[in-house]
Image (tube, rainbow, N blue to C red; front, side, top):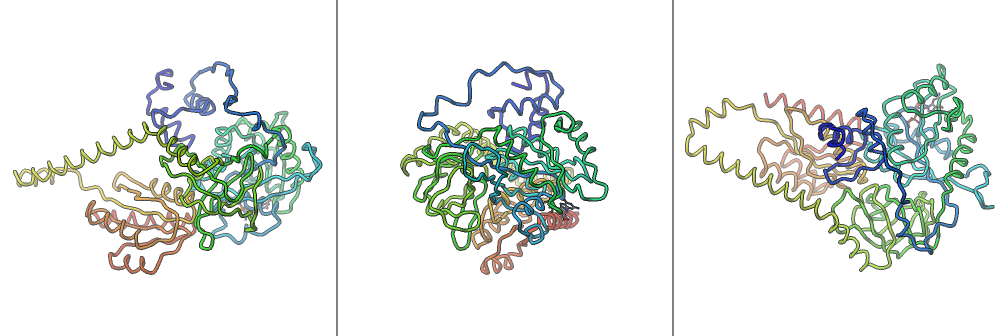
Length: 517
Ligand code: GDP
């Protein structure tokens, strides 16, 4: 509709939309007003909106669910790589993770709480803010995009000696798409060459973020994560922003929140990290997960136990907390909405209902898949027939046709769903005109014998020119799988740093391409 209205090719609108946001767009996707605004901005179109009269689904709210208590703000720190996100979180947490991590990059979502200065948040008790640790590499865009879901405030870190960079722009766009207010932290103000004023003008020019110092309304604090200077002022700014947002929750409402990640812990089994936004989560509760991107009818489960971010066991989790929930057997997609439901029957029914709602999308996908399969088998049959009927002609055809495209089949295993998805996305983006990349799956857990079977069958059945590889990101490989890999000569690339993994996959690709010549 947007394409038609703007007399712009549909493909162009799709491209702009996917560049702005990672979500998968189909002709059925309903675009948010914020996204429409950004798309029209990018396409330089003039579109005005009719005023909206209705607030967000008020009719669905019952009196008992009316938000009543102040809840702590949930903060996500975003920004360009090396601008000091990890150092800032580290300084706020008074620990030393910035030095200890693999490659110095934050790779999975966690959270911690920091006491806020005694701003009047409406009650006598000490106020806290929950900080969500977000990943710092472009390949983790998918996860980071979900990091803002369930976030109240984004702290955008910009290095004073480097200025606005591509990931600064991307982070600001993601925050705007999610309608989350931004506080800017100009970091490294202690460094030689630091020029916070220049950064403020860049923010204004490039991102239309008008800092208070320039007369605008965006809070902007000059800090140093290294020396700790002005960190209390940053917390003040957060406290003020939280007050303006008037974040409220009702402990009596059904528990609701957002799933940040789900992973398999060797000792605890499946652990889903959930930010609670309303109500309470308690052991024994049934949870329903809703993700518009996932077409599955099994996104529900029962809480067996709750752990705080420091592995401490809890009986319940209140609004604003980020906790690990144990006992959900299925892997939950990052970014999924979480709702407590009364019982398993209801969870199952609602889950099926959700799937049915998506049925048209499912059937479109199934239809497309079966059409593709039918076309493939038709082509195979034609080929076989041609070979039998006229071998000479077929040979001639073959010599005239394009050289065969090389293919790579990849199975990704990761420690959390978000990183497995991000790795798969990163590898998929390495596809070239000469090499087709087929991702067989992106799953959570160690590489096992079943994985090797899947990938070796793909090689035998699908296509003899397809090279298989298994990628183990932050996970181990079982001994039996190593033996199978050796037997079938299937490489397993084991990495914990995305840059190294990317390099090795690139090397493999150039090997495959040069072998094909
Ligand atoms: P991230 O990639 O955004 O998480 O950035 P890091 O926190 O890993 O920081 C990148 C580099 O900048 C590290 O070498 C830090 O020691 C350095 N750094 C971070 N904050 C500051 C700061 O406030 N001042 C100075 N001088 N260096 C900093």
